[in-house]
Length: 261
View 1: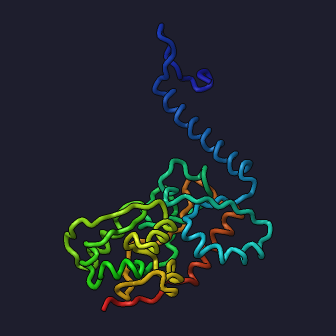
View 2: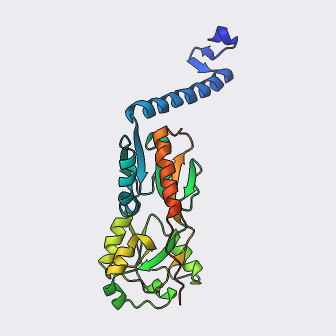
């Protein structure tokens, strides 16, 4: 290869071999080429036509599962593998090796992905009737005396306090939970107060197992997003699922706003 390139790739010394500057440049290109080959092999063999989805449990169970039947009936050859990834898919190294696409909750600032917001969300403050009876909540500032339940970090609560003019709230008691299903059961069982997408807990609000102390919904910069790794090329079957989900999301919408009285 050195003869073909008419350049030295290695520097030989008593200590052994080390790459020359030309060798370092070539090695970087070779590494990228090998990575592309590995990715191509993984997509063409190990998945064997299966669409790998990294989904959040709440979204998958409360929105997607009831809609998948129509897609699969119209496309019986589609094969899906659905993985629970609790909002970490957007942050793992080489996500294209793990899944073809994913659904993540957040503000959409994931630079390694093509990101499409599914719809604008409305949030609801929710707690159990017993918790509300023991912790009266009439004004947003009353939440500074409550245990606030959350998943991942507290940014949603911080945004909510700012939007509702609660300046520099005294740090309330907080509890971080693994996922939104656990958060939901913890809220129903009276462990504290949560913020949820309104549609996601509508069954519990309608049944009375959860209550909305303000009777209002709130705008948020957070939403569910469809994300596709920039390093991956979508196969025809992945493209079909991707386009189906986006078409479906355009016909869906968050509930109409309910103002805080």
